[in-house]
Image (cartoon, rainbow, N blue to C red; front, side, top):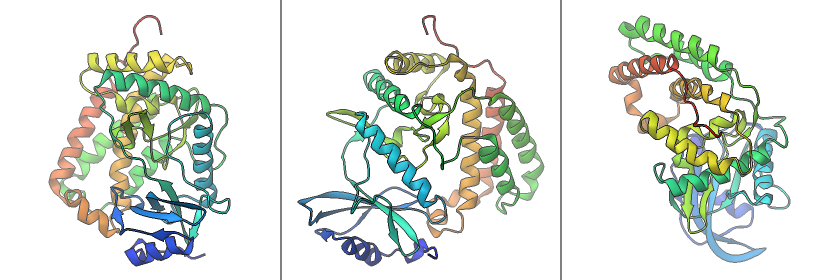
Length: 331
């Protein structure tokens, strides 16, 4: 199949795809906040499930993940559900969850409402720690065969190659920017030496975590891959060092009821942060030809953005050279 272009994914095309698989549509489409994929909410019903309800349809970005990689993500989600880990999973139609569409793929999810998890709420963090422990208990039971791992090659070296070709970095900043970028890459590469990789959520931040009357639940495993356990914990740590230690202790107290945590992984936090910072810049550069990116991230093409990023990299270089967080006695 030849790949389709997101520019061709008009509302009529989305509705045609949904009707083709049997949906009776009762509303229009509401776009949801997603740049990597195209995601819409709607109200409808299926003949085999004659109940009108809210649904979410996700059209995957072409050529990002293969069918096998998408299926592996979905299968991981089903494993989590079977283990009572709260996650929103895609539905299957005629035994399939990865659905073809003119050279690409899409998936259907039940819509589950909730409010954003508060990263400074101790009770919610304790619940999150418990659920992450259960997620990692499942995650370490198998390995991904198709999806990649968090690595310095994918997140640092390949990202640097992309940034080297980026036309938006001001010429007068090239030397200073790439000097500090290379220093961060060198330091992060030396420090990122994980002892164990497991299947992780991969993008566990407040935007992908919601809470309702039943507690926190996970959405969007689009970035799941093999990685260290700390990858799903460190983005929940905010504020000063003392605050980060408090939040980490709260989560790990619940986490370790289900899964052992290796304190040696704390030294991976700053390298992982560096990998995320650099990978994000390269992600914007890779996607800049998509009109949605120029419209939603106009500051990417400004001198001010790159001046700020140079300062961010200098701060991250400082953090990489500081002693890592250390747990209180008892862990």
